[in-house]
Length: 362
Ligand SMILES: Nc1ncnc2c1ncn2[C@@H]1O[C@H](COP(=O)(O)OP(=O)(O)O)[C@@H](O)[C@H]1O
Ligand SMILES: [Mg+2]
Image (cartoon, protein in one colour):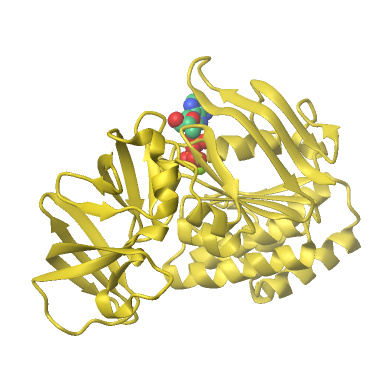
């Protein structure tokens, strides 16, 4: 049974621009779904509609088959963790966690039991009497998580809960959140603008841009089969290389670069002969000659090196061919100094996009 269902869910604040535009999405029971997109794309708006904190302009929202549009937030059985934590500053950690439960008239002993369990789980036991301002950012974030956890709801909504934490703490808290999900089995919708977070945490990723859902799928699908050039450009680090050019017989030809097409691509692009297309190739699909494997179909490019980032386990080569900037990523530490290099492009990994629709040509 699907837990959360959205049919053409739409939100407009001003009657014109649609902050969320016709969102169709099903989130299965117990699933960990990540909503990913750049700042301003409508992620928070979507979450707030599900929580009932924002009215729905159009469309329908269901939880376990129940129409939710008019249901009050407190009756939705949903807990939300806010980006800003939204803790009550004058209340102790304990009271912050107890507040929502008291409102629900849950018995004192039960409240106490739940808070102590959550505090232990989140390493907050010794801070229960403190006020939020006397806690670190990471501890405050855990209080916010604890407050959601003690509600024992069937659904968790999390709005960029890690964005105010430093890198190391973010990594730790990521693990905590994944564990909370495993233990509680609550259906979780987790919002982030960070693609690494999305790829590592989600079993299903929903990519959004300008209010519109662009694609949903597993991390592999989103990475390997992007629906359009936005998704291709948003996922992956460093970003995919985009090159505009023409399909000419068995080649893709741009101003600076000529690449041979595979047999499949020749078929795929038969309607595009003589036409412009956009090619996308990820930095990790450019190789040094000696690293080329048999199942690849390579085409060489000679590039001038602008700068090299040596990251220990990998090497990022920033360069250009003519005026086309190209980034390559080698899966090892490259010691030698270089001014130019010939790299082999594995064309089996290339993506092609229609210049008008921006959709992937498949
Ligand atoms: N209360 C509001 N009133 C008017 N416009 C809003 C309001 N909240 C958000 N918006 C607009 O809706 C769009 C989506 O915002 P938001 O959902 O906060 O995006 P995200 O969380 O992805 O950064 C933005 O253009 C934003 O300016
Ligand atoms: Mg937001």
